[in-house]
Image (cartoon, rainbow, N blue to C red; front, top):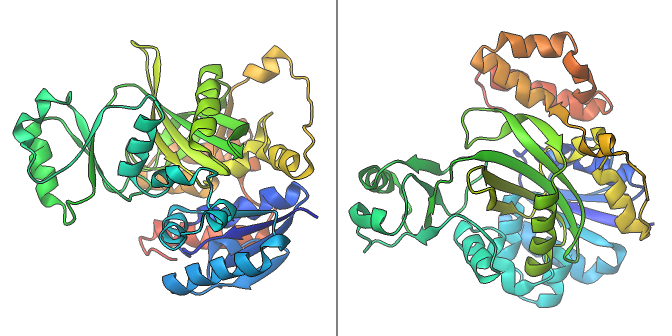
Length: 379
């Protein structure tokens, strides 16, 4: 049986919680490598658990050792979050092990994995359209930066997630002020802010080939435009599909990817702003569309593509999806009564997004949601 090893170092990221469900429903054997308290273990959809250390060095060394000694038992190794990817990237030197564990087939593009500076360089080297950017250096004259970049700009620390570490600056003086507030000024990207519509994309690649993708308009953010999203409308987009095909081939993507675009209507252009080579919370919800990642994972494991004839109406249908705990937390914090009623009265079938299919996962989700609403963060 096709076997996938899922690995996650962090125990506070909730995104890995529903990922085993996709692989199991695709007919695969699922082995998880994580600590006892990891969200990756908070579900019923894995066959075997390998206890992993909470010490970073031990986690990385033991995972590499496992793959070296028993790698033939796993058809695929998938690192589920940014912290795990960054951790392993710092320990792997051999190309053979790199291509077995990391989500890339081209080791020369490894800079993209856990660094915004590296990502910008990889995009530039592969002729991929992105907003203009500069790497911050202390000798820069920030008050004259508007001669090189158009303001506003985004100030991004090198390693950040869910909008943390991103600041919008409308003028050189504001940029100077925000940089002075940073503790670590060595790895910082200054990127032009493109006015336009945020487009969230999830995709699955296998050895550089695009297998499946999902495109979404953002309806709701948790806090602001740089924070994670709680509600989306999914649709198809041929222009983005073409960009994804090129991106996968040139960079060598070889796993799931969470991708962000900005669409500028005046230029009719899509700017690639983020490529994180890992899973996210939206991917299991693809089962509510006509392009499910479960089917795509089955295609990867069996080598057989399921041909389905979709009508034009089915292909272009827009589907509204919300993540239960995220959106409920947003509703209560923002005092969005209309949003709360949407869940209470099953607006557009919202109840189907409540993860009642897995009592173990649902129980932890509820505990976290209640804890967050009471302002007592719980890991």
